[in-house]
Image (cartoon, rainbow, N blue to C red; front, side, top):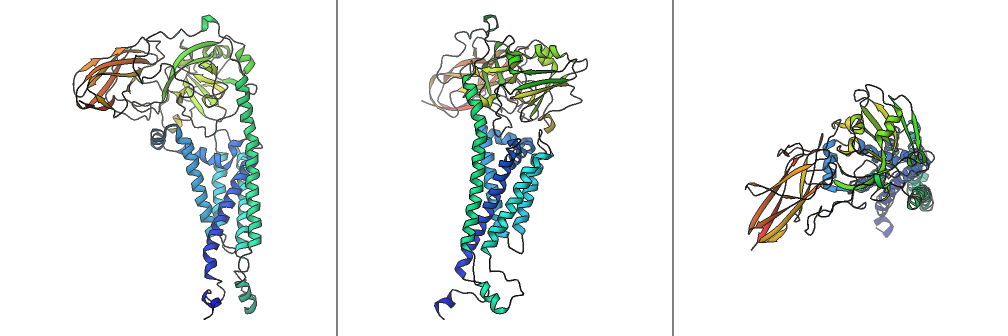
Length: 539
C-alpha cells in the first residue's frame, strides 16, 4: 500500500484528514451565518427603533416572560449583574445554535438553514410582540434571517463543492469530483464577506451609540431648575447616622443607588425630545415638554425608595434628595374624572406601572423628578424625567424615562408586573436590617456596636429591638427621624461574650404595628420576616 492509499477511505469519500477540518469549517459557517442574521437585523432595526433588533428583542422577551420565582432568584443571586449575565448567556446560546446549524447543514439537506429560519421566526415574534412594538418590528429579524440562510448555504456549499455528486455523472467524473475537496478560496472569500457584514453592522451600532453620547453630553451641560429656599428639603440633622465605622450613610450616592428595571439597554432620550402626554379619564388632555415642565416651581424632597424584589436584609433600598415637580399639580390641571382610581404610566421603552391615584393626590411628596442628589438624573435612573412616589414599591410607582400618563381604573387596565402575578397597589412593608458588623465577622469579646437601618415609608419607625440568640428583646438606640418617607438609623451596644451568636432585629412602625416574624417571599407584594446575622466572638 502506498502513501496515497493509506490516507484514503475508499471511492468517493476523500481523505480522512479532511473530515475534522470540514466539521470545524461547517461549525464556523453556522456561527458566521447567525452573526450575519443578527447583525444585519440590528442594522435594519436602527432605521426606526433599535428595540426591534433581534438580539435585544429576544433578550427582552426572556426578561418579560421569565417566571416570577426565576426572576427573583436571579436578582437575589446576581443583583444588578443580572442583565450582563443574561446578555452573555444569550450570546453563548446563539453561538451554540450557530454551531449546530453549521454541522447539520448539507447542500441537499438544508437542516441548518431550517434552524436559522426558526430562529428568525422566534426573533420576529419577540420583536413584534414587545409592549411598544408593531408588526413592522418583525421585518429586521426576518430580513436578517433570510440573508443568514443564504450565507449558510453559500458557505457550506463551498465546503461541499465536488463532494456530493448529482448521481447522473459518469462514474469517472463522479469519482473525480468526489475527491476534489472543498473550494477553500471560495470559502475564505465568503467567510471574509460575512465578517465584513458583521463589522459593518457593528459600525452602525457605533453610529447609534452617538445618540447615547448626545444624551450624555446634554446631561453634562444641563442645569437643574432653581429650587427656591422655601421648597428646599430640610437639612439632614447632625447625629442622624450612628457614630460607628461601616454604617450605612443616610443619603445614598448616585453611583451606589440600586438599579432594578427591565431595560437591557438604557433608553437614550434627550430633554429636548422628551414629552409627557396626560390623557384617559380626564377633563382635558395635556402634552407637556421639558420647557413647560421646568418653568414650574421646583421642589427638593428626600425620599427613600425600595424595590419589591428586596429580600429580608437586602440592599435594594436607598435614599436620595430628589428635585422635581408635584405630580398632584399636573393631575389637577388635567382634571381626573369621577371613578378614576389609577394612573397607568409608561416608559419610553414600553414598560408600565399602575399607581393608585389616591397615592398621587393625598398630599405626599409624589414628584415628577428631574434631579437626584443635586445632579440631573443619571441615565440609568431615568434621565431626563422619572416618577418618585413615597410609600409604594417601585414596580407600581417609580417609572423611569416616563413619557405617558393614562388616568384610568384598576378594573380596566393593568401594568407590566401586575400582569405577571404581582400585587396591584404595592404598599411598602415595615423592614429592618443589620448593617454592621459584616456577615460572619469574627469579633473580639467586649463592647460591640451593632448598627443598621429600618423603614416603613408613610408610617415612620417608632422602635427597633434587637435579640441576642434566644434572649429577650432589647430596645436599640434610634437616631433622629428625618421624615415619614425616609429610613431611620439605629444602633445597639452589645457586650459580646465568646462563642457563636445570632442577632435578630425587628421594628415597630408609627402605627404601633410590630414587624412580623413570618418569612414570606418577595412575590407577590414584598418579603417579610426578621433579619438576622451570625457572629463568632473570640476571647
